[in-house]
Image (cartoon, rainbow, N blue to C red; front, side, top):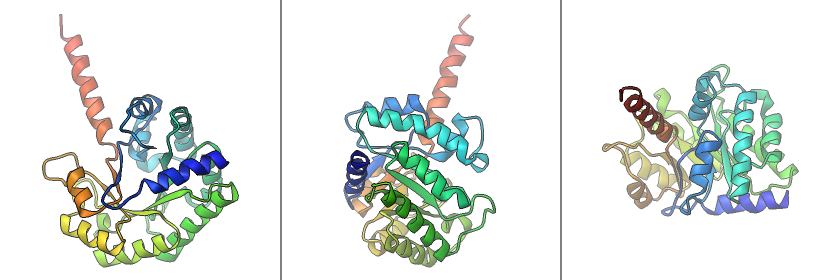
Length: 257
């Protein structure tokens, strides 16, 4: 797995505070190929919400096999373009964590987005449980020869109405456990404010992932870079745009006579 670790190390090195890696999240082979072919694309990442919709289900209902079946062909696209690939694997599906991580890494994946909410119960893992799940993930990667495997540890405290202080405590613990970055999700409506981003950048030494809102009221990539984040993603935003465009073009053709 030496070649995989080279790409994992590359992915890790792209997380630079103030000069962030930017992901335009993909969801199938077609979208992956379109993005991977761009000279400006440094790495590929999925968004589970978009992957689920592309496979006829919803994010909360997608099981491990559906996610794996969808993302492993994307790994082949990433390999074709020699680019690192990270997967939104939700919470890694409870006690299937080792099984799922093994399948991903053996399939050519170099990092994961790992959530701190139990997918089955919709309750938070305790901070210690979440920390242990990060360590378990990295232990699997190390055993497979990918010691630089990237964990983007997602914290959902804010979207569930929690306090920033708990986000900071959890985030620091996740980083100490070996996560490369912390993804703080504030929700599609709430998001995260400029002040919150600034505080988290300071407390996490820049090792922060923010989901960029593609709307005038959201912080854009330049602003997030100036604030010092190391990773920017957009979730399913481009899928929404793509499907809206598809429908509009289809409507033009269908109503042309």
